[in-house]
Length: 278
Image (cartoon, rainbow, N blue to C red; front, top):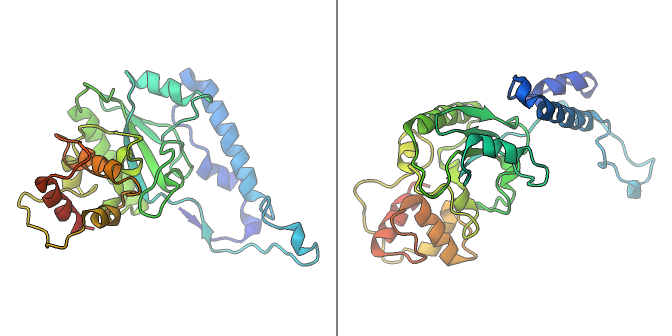
């Protein structure tokens, strides 16, 4: 949703319509919904401040600066979707964690094992799900992505059909709404090698078959003799500053049966095939 009006017509109420979203209407979460709305209202006030707070500088001199609002601007447009597993035991436990200011973490969506989708942060706002991360040249994935947490303990839990089906429907909506490229549906492990391993044993192929991320073909061709595996990983998006960690992250996503930090001949075939899709 883009705005192209004069700055005088941008009222707080107009921005509030965009920024304030009640994810749950029940009284069970009334207290946290109130906090959410208050924080969103504070952000809308910041956006509506003319001139923007902190964007005119005293060093220029009071008579040598001016605010003139352009009519051509918009708000945050997510360009990635990052998928996580919660590493917790229930949807309720994850929601409770996302209510904790001490934990300081959140995601835009949480999907339970039974397929229930809980929307917790407005898509246009920045959730705290990616942490220290990097994908390509992007070092602030919190600002450029939508985070989706899947209710899964990361150890023995399967991926139920109900949960994956809800995820696929959500991804289809997000891709259409924000024009998110096929390549930009990734996992937490992809953007945070060594530090994270989620989502683990995840059905990425099922997502790729629907246009959310890439997967390798059934028939794999040999790469050229000068194929550089490190450069291929980097081209896909992996942070190769710690190459073994990048290899492990790649294998968590595409190999899964073996996540040792060494590329086998088969791994190289898979890497080359995936690389050619980018």
